[in-house]
Length: 127
Image (tube, rainbow, N blue to C red; front, side):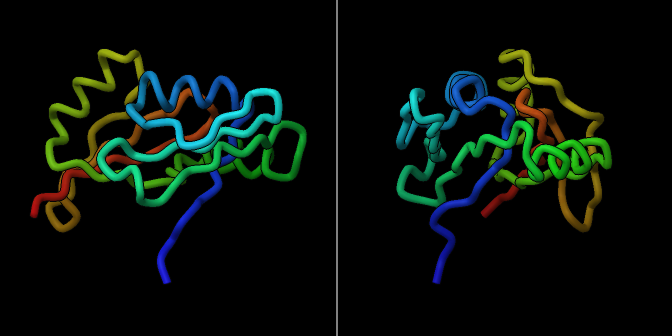
């Protein structure tokens, strides 16, 4: 068994789709703005796990999303093999980054805001 699709709460799926595809570098897999349906995938793994940008405004997920953000809990961990380059790309895309985390046991990591109410973590993995 493997993960096919995960749901990420967002306030506005149409705006989230725009941010995830233009600023974060994901590719659109399925998109229907009239139905508030937005699914994105990694450009590095278009056949891998997809992310459903799930509308959460005025729902139980809205409170959960806010709580996770206020507690500084990232909801997804993303992987790159060149963190420095990825951080510069995110900065150039005007993504809000949190202070760098560095724990030799876990490697170098950063947390950033997705612009849709969530914190995401990016970590460097080398082969």
